[in-house]
Image 1: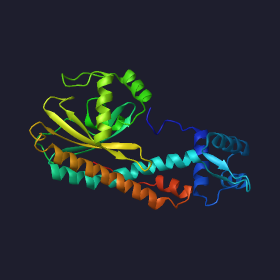
Image 2 (image 1 turned 180 degrees about the vertical axis):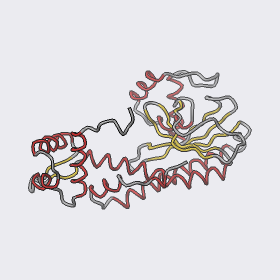
Image 3 (image 1 turned 90 degrees about the vertical axis):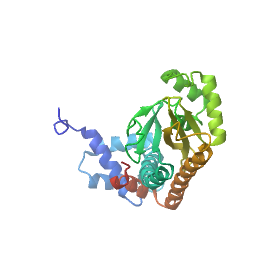
Image 4 (image 1 turned 45 degrees about the vertical axis):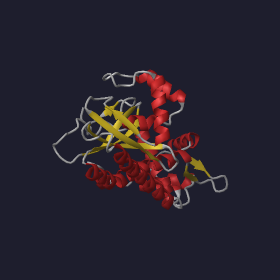
Length: 282
């Protein structure tokens, strides 16, 4: 069945219409105002408003009775905004890192226990890395993955490993939770991670975490090269370049969030919903 022939869900459409209407209001809307704007049965609107209020997507003013954006809706808007800004701000920094190192540059996020690549930049056909945007990679044997899970609570880390396992790619791959914990402690201490032929023989990677506005690890970036490109003689300089790039992306994200802190929740939600495809990485 094609998408055009697949029916929409009327109740969901009505709910989204209510959220959009409230989000576009500057000071919230009363029940009467919402019913006047939307040609839906009053009983349906009442049930949807009650559900949104219970779930935290809308809140009702105790003095005016107006419906306003709730904390959960604002949080979703902030997450969407972080993703848009991450792509926009990271692109020129990642491109500069690629030019300065001459290596393939990746950016990834943690998704369902794996590192998912959301950006890849490389200069040309020489030493191409067999990766692509959307590829999912193991977290225990890659520099990106180690950065993404280094700050997870121990219980969450244990659960992740129980679910995903520690696939052994070669004799260099970390194959025990104890050794992985040691490696992650090192990553936290140094502020970067290394994949020393742990996933693929002949390939080394250096990664660093990108901190979100709240100090959490939002994403990670890395450079990938051959063992000839990344050696003891130049590793310190390369580590500095990767850490500087990650720090600059983190700084710009924090700067952007601070600049928007004065905006009302509805304005944030409207901004998060705007089309910003021009900032998407290749």
